[in-house]
Length: 266
Ligand SMILES: NC(=O)c1ccc[n+]([C@@H]2O[C@H](COP(=O)([O-])OP(=O)(O)OC[C@H]3O[C@@H](n4cnc5c(N)ncnc54)[C@H](OP(=O)(O)O)[C@@H]3O)[C@@H](O)[C@H]2O)c1
Image (cartoon, rainbow, N blue to C red; front, side, top):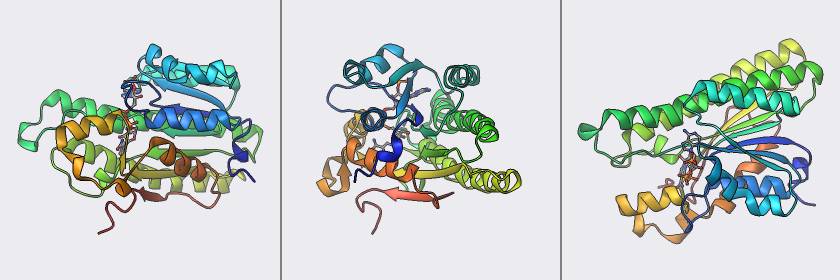
């Protein structure tokens, strides 16, 4: 049996879907592709509508159900408008994959530029939080109408939250916060589910290791990661399978999973 049959007819929002570097697919693209090919209605988001459309055009040509939307997740009013549009258009949201992120400029701590600090925290920290806030509101509204609706959120952090890597201080700081938010959300949402006799909205965090995407390409150039053994890096498609499987795990709540081919195991 196909392990992804649960995706059929689910409404899924994926942030960070765009084509930025023709050498590599990004994680959002791989997620959107797997979701759409398994029958989900997908909403793909990036700051740049043209790049987002380019990333999913082949899926649209195949007749799959996928929309592209522009949204800068660092701007709360844009996030609010996106979720208002989802509510008006579809009335619900089953799954959110909070994937958009940026590594910013790779700078040592004592040379950090202030605009780099602001951008990296605004994108990975605030942007994730804004989408989480709006998604939970929409999911709770839906659960009032159907108390068994299946709702699940995955936030994408990084192994940078767990291990020190040079020149990644702001990124590591923001990504570490994402795991904490997931735990708090889980406690709040489980209490809500008990009080309202509804299915719990599950929130989990994934810490990917080295994934061969445009972001990884930039790290390679700047951080000299060429020495990583092939077993300790993987494709965005392989990671997408691991992420999407977790959307359907009913007992998985508040978890923080490292998926890195053993990179941090030693
Ligand atoms: N690749 C890795 O090795 C790795 C490892 C650990 C964790 N991660 C995490 O996995 C996620 C995806 O990474 P990736 O490797 O696919 O990176 P990527 O190739 O750089 O893609 C990042 C995506 O985020 C979007 N984005 C950036 N800022 C945004 C904003 N303010 N609002 C909306 N969208 C925004 C970008 O699109 P636009 O530029 O068009 O907005 C792009 O689609 C990130 O959160 C990253 O931190 C990656």
